[in-house]
Length: 442
Image 1 (tube, one colour):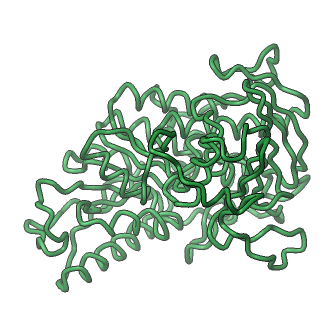
Image 2: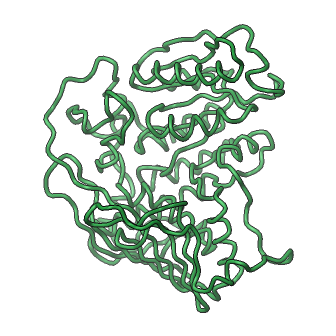
Image 3: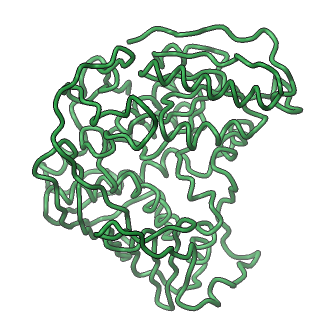
């Protein structure tokens, strides 16, 4: 893999850059993967807090390393009104993890790298903010969660809906019986279009493509498969099954996690799953298209997931329903035309939303900012809003639905042993072969 790009840090960092936070109390953060989601979400989520300092970045695209350094140095320069050049760049994340000055890392890579990098990070005694979904496969997710628990490190999954008021409110109302006994949950996800064929292209000199493929099979380079070489628009890997399962995990990891929160099933999963899906028959992009899957949980609650439902989570109870979604979320349409905005939180009876949760009732974990909660928990060593096991259970549930799409039959899942009952074919889909030398360190 590549070598370190820059190692030097300023001998003196102006205190005004980080407010009144003493240097000894700052959390030094390294960012691994500095593309679209990092620049637009994770880096701003961290640099807003004076208690943290982003001191290093790493990416397998050298161009993106330089762009991230420029971006972060510019932010810190603006904070102090003075020139700042305190961000080191790496091409090899192992070298970043070896830097003992770095306390924690935020992992914002493609999905197929998430669990592997998280395991390496906690083995290096770093706390971790891990973009969702937690893993590429259920087996990887289990290894990751076990490694985090054994290490004692703080890992926060980027399931930021847990830190949004309407999701917290919806789940707290559901958990406290405001719609009666929960019977059914409906989850709507956005869709992904298929794409054209893409011819092989020369690998850019600034990209370590072999390491970018990581544990997945070797396939020819084409820009549509990876990420844009100019700009930070949505990358093509999101629509390639080699690197992820598509929207069922991309958005599903968020919405299933919220559903589990409201259902009080955060540490388990369904016991039966079945459904159907359309998959492209040609073209580079091959993740699922139109689909509908169903699940049953041990407590009898049923769940349907589809792109035909409004984007969000709808809880049905014996005495009403609650629907929750992101602010100004729109309903996806087959035509691609704009649809009406959805209200973030609605109910069958508006009075449900005005209900007061009493002091003697159940109150859910309170967080106002997912990155801020992570930083607070690094200092307190308390469990974060979305710890590894919860993230794994949300992701594994999505992957079970994906396996149901593939097998096209009813599957019976054991959430304790984490395997399918009497189904060797489905159990073979719990893991994937890993390509040397990028295998997961168990």
